[in-house]
Image (tube, rainbow, N blue to C red; front, top):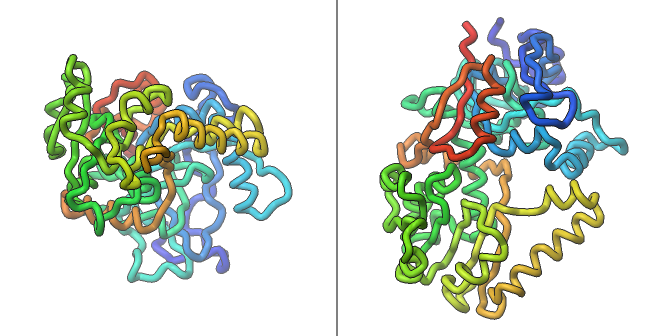
Length: 383
């Protein structure tokens, strides 16, 4: 394979027309529907600001498991349609899943200069849910969704960073209103510090200078302690709620554990600082579920109701605070900051287990079973 810069315009293609990829042809549990296709079509061309990457490792996220079974298909299909500026729904299958990865730059678009990346550079990256994923030999992504891999990180470690990290970063910044400039001395509660988002949230917030309290189970305390929170509360203890109150009131509560909406008003919104625009941010957004269940129009109406109702019923709005939804977004600024924090060794992602590419179904099963202590990674041992 030659190391030649290419663009969609010049017709160059220094990579094979076929590749190996895990793909699905229908929405069903991954273990039932996925096949390892060694004749899958590789990316046909590159846009001027795209890079083509030979994938060396990728991670399996809970959203991959859900998307295999059709989660988000209505809204994501409309996004794909809009991206292609088409009046017709795009053909979804065969569909390759996978959201974050690490690998080497094989080709780049005409507007990707050497000040950004060079052929052969080791990078980490992320794929938006509406794009075909990275559980494949090659993947194409915009330059804004990749960054150089820190030298101290293995490909397996780098493949774990961005999807969970960006989900967290966007929840803290876009929904939570915090960033490196204003988070110093803010009092933040992270519910579920032992999970992927919880891990990332603690480390990002501490790098910003925030005071962080987090919750986890007894057997995860040692793992969470290594992330550097100010206070750890074992939620299995009888006085957990009293401890939450002791370390509050909070400027922000980030729910990384999926607290039921009915519990938010009774146990958590009273812990927010009153009349300070404090926020409870949950990643348990019903947006994709509602559009799947009710279609685009009625689904969006249901979303509006589902956002307003908890704010009113919990009493949050009557004390100057709000309940908000956090989302993953492929934000360029977030990619840059997470890559920098990783290079400075201020953020790491624990790895639960590593699987071979041929064992992708087992990796999906591991994620589906839950109770993880870090990310599940798939490595590509292509010579």
